[in-house]
Length: 224
Image (cartoon, rainbow, N blue to C red; front, side, top):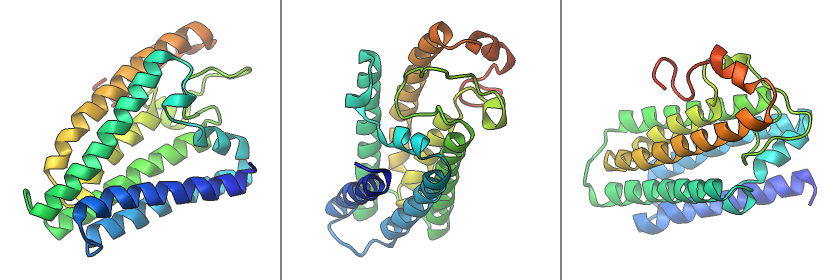
């Protein structure tokens, strides 16, 4: 499938899946937080996608080939499956929280959550633009080199940093504090993915060991 039709199908499927996870548990379409969230996700995800479509379609195609089945390492299949489950649970729990009023969230906080989601997705998009080897799967491509500038000069895995930022914003954007509990397993899954990924990179990517000495933090500057 060519890049543009594949991108459209990918975006449509993503929109439908998100919509089902939001509005089925909510039991209603009168859920403005969910509608704003969908718009924020669509704009934040599609803006870098359209840019890559014009400037680096190969990198865009690599980003669209994700999921447990696309991973070549068993450990990564398990990690990605766990990450997807935690994200789905986060969305559903947040939606149920909003529906039943377990932890009412002020409108201002919901909007802050949308901004946080946009920032997280923006970081992910910036990473793919800065590093054309940043795919959705863990592997080393032929001719791949270490990128140590831009966001990679701050942490070794800025894409996952963007994911963590996004995860923190999702429950707040959907009007839930309880959903924040599900950020914990998501971060654990990412930490596990990072450790396994670095084993591969240290072995197969020239210059990566030296890079880890230059940029010492994996996910959060001055923390880890």
